[in-house]
Length: 378
Image (cartoon, rainbow, N blue to C red):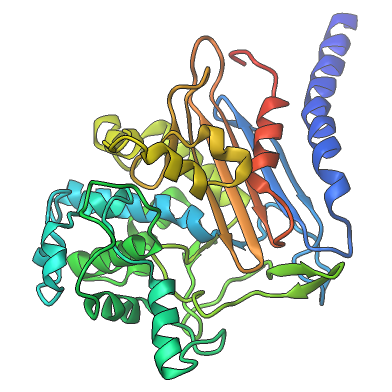
């Protein structure tokens, strides 16, 4: 009987240890009157810690928890890439198809841009925010948080340009334009809206019941966090910007509980076989010097780990432990996902952080949290 009690106490203490370590990292960052963050830590396919810090919004002061939905921003790109890969699986698309085969009206510079260039950021497509700035310099204000740019307008801006920034495949440059176009490709080749395709092929099959592609005026995000920026020591709501309506580059809202299911699906190859998913975590072939560009795009905390890019994932295969990761950042929201596959006798682990404020570094915090999980196969 005594041994049973000791085992039960040991189990209880073991369960408390991750919470104590995580609370030491995150609890000082937010309180019941500030926006904050949600934290998920998984090891060997099970959740060892899930917690919320701070509030969803400064009006209701509802606490952040595991079902609070956040805008994922560029964290979205891994879902867009998965949607494209599912269409390749279906035989409706090929990685080497040219942009002009899909959009015949696209200018001649699209003849050398292939789907894989869009996926791995080697397309040379101009950044649509730069194109927006050019238009507004000539014509005055065109877009605002109330009058947002949509995907079709992004495509139109790209079609009004007669050249890319560089020949495809010769450089690496992070491209939100490329992922907006990929979202449009998913819609065109599937015959469904981007959001509907993701719901039917990814979210619903995985049980991600509260994850969606947000379209203002068409659907709603329940239990959502609102975004905030810190200015002069105070938090100002900055939930939407002129670019918040684009989809493939950053339009998904999700929460920790749903993203734990996404992590399970990636680990178990639920949506695609291991061989079909391999291109997503295979470094894009890049010319010399490209790693510097990769590092410059990444958050400062992640620059040493930005060694390559696949399809919707930054990659670091040269570290002691291989790592696939991504970050997200938009007005009022920041996010990060770090996934370490099982290696060298150590267990797989995943850290996901979603934040509704602009003054934190979720990527750096995720690194710290990952380092606080004891090594070992259990």
